[in-house]
Length: 275
View 1: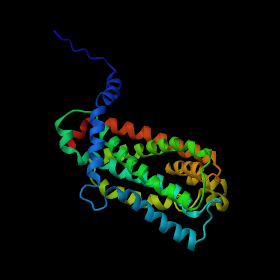
View 2: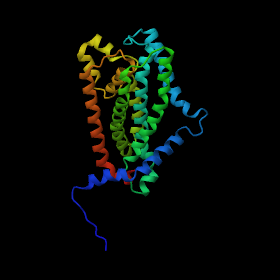
View 3: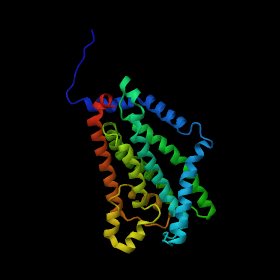
View 4: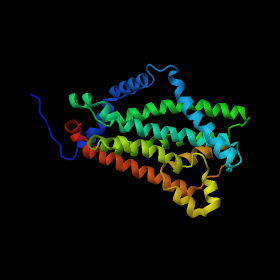
């Protein structure tokens, strides 16, 4: 005869253990989303390159060519590229994960699995696009004859930071989107607005030169700033890291991740009923 033992305070430990037990489902959902993402498109995965490439061309032409903004001692297109690629990863991960629960309503209402798998798999899909788009950076560096430095070895760490920075607001928005469907209209606005308040087309060094350390610290209140500065530090080779603003931005990213996990777990039990 089997005994059912209920242990007080063990639900969290079992939940995180379930994430590992359902790893095959996680892989299946991520692979399914990758296949569906560009299904019935003419050029397929090439969109992962075309979208950021057009942004880089327009940004470099307007802000570098017409406005003449500084580029930290590297070709302006490479500086914009180093900001555009992590931003597209962040924005795509946020948008895809925010709609992941609503888009899988039938699955949620039928079987049990840790719901955290859905937004996490959506972030993985965004990461695949990001990995493909890195060919833009390689092409620009070859075009300008720019050799990478040892700093490029740190790029995987900043990519991991980008992953964590996207997961926090992604979990928060996807949980809110289940209960308040108005967020499907709010999220595109947040993404569009975030492009201009993030240092994608300009460097935080230029902000510091004009507004001093206070201005740079204020800009760092945006969690994605630490990721963009990290990418530019690793890729450009001439950009110096402002560690105070980087630590602030990274700390806010981790705080947002903790908040996102907390709110997601708090509301997870109601998803099947509300959705």
